[in-house]
Length: 628
Image 1 (cartoon, rainbow, N blue to C red):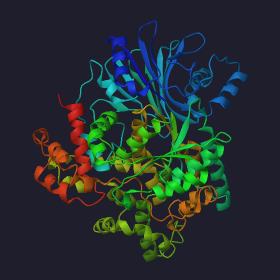
Image 2: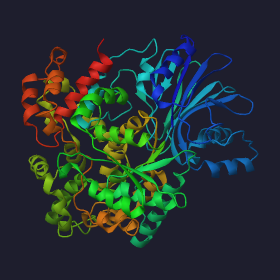
Image 3: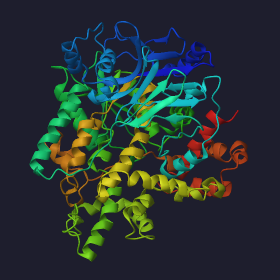
């Protein structure tokens, strides 16, 4: 886990600019930094290091034996020991014990197809001096970030946008289309960022750049397929998923530094904590890290986290963030995020990462479980409509729905707190095509439109077109799988953006076993009639972990996420702060807010609403990154 930077250019002072880029992301590498420049002065690579594997020998940028090929790498290749063994048999000689060198030799052996050999999270750039080319790649799910800027004869890349902005040539203009995407989905849906001209290499993509700074190839090397496996039984899928889960956690315990786990008390983090504890060092207790708020039971899951911690004999740690912490740290969070945060959960996640950093350097978490195993209530909302339609048209059985109207009934109590959503959702377009229905479920702009001036949403139809392109862009045929695919491509990368920034802000490495690509590929092939059987969220996952986590966790019905008592704070401790930011001269002069409606919304927003949060993050982002 580190920070990477680099420049290919005939027009820039490369070394000076790379040094500035590294300084901007100093937090990503507390254990050292270095810069390499090619003899031809066409390419300069920079690296900030957080030492996790081969602490002494894994310094970067790292060359191959003849120093013709150099790499700067962020992430971790969990199967590096197995790959190293294979590569040694093929004649490769290793000088270190690092996973970084494994990537180099894999590139020498397999060329750009090396990406298919890796199990892990990665963003890297390899300068091939013999070909005078830069090869860049990002992991399949987008756990690690990679941003770039290309113009004329210059190509710049970095782990964070702020590093690119630290150079002498990149401006700070807002990408208005990406802004509309953020207001709609709380994240851009393409390779755009909110900064005009700055792109992100998408998950599962790779690119090649010539020494003159021109991108010569950019392609998707991995995607998910939903072709159903109809040859196996539910029992087979349960057993195989359990094996994959165990191996995914086991190989992510490879570390030369102390590690621990996040533990909220939900299914996902509890599974990771229990499995990690079972594979942890003999006689050693694993550290667990939990966050909660004291404002009420609806903001506190510690009773469940405590059950798991006691069950596995962990060393538990708890942080209880306050409104005072929020006031003090929100500007710092905005700085680390580079772009407005997807949701208020970034704040407690930031605090839990701080807690973890005081005890370990690596932390495992349950990120991705809802997107992979169909855990969100919105999947049930969408599928309930399908069941109604199937019952009316008498097509439920012939279409092989995951649930029928009668069978979905036991799962419906989960939707009690979503009655306002259902009321709004069913007001328009009932039984429309799949893409129209899920767009309505995912569109967050309705609650925000009245607090923004109307011209902010001019051209909003382009956002819908991009949504359709992604939602309909897989081989999935079922509504569930299309929902999952969109979330995998848009919603999940936004959450992983938070995961990366909140961990790296405190100099720790975050690992996400549930997003092992082998698990993702496997679960995608499981028929919807099994993985979402009778409309039960995480049906297959629950069966796989039945004897892994305590029964009290498995039987929970009160899924929470990580809610923040913002609406309570807006009326008390945060009242003056929010008014100063959103109703102050800078926000008013910016001209994007309808300040009358915004003032009304600040004090009337319902619990867990996100309109004010979205506006607050956006205004602070403008002040941090755009304003002179």
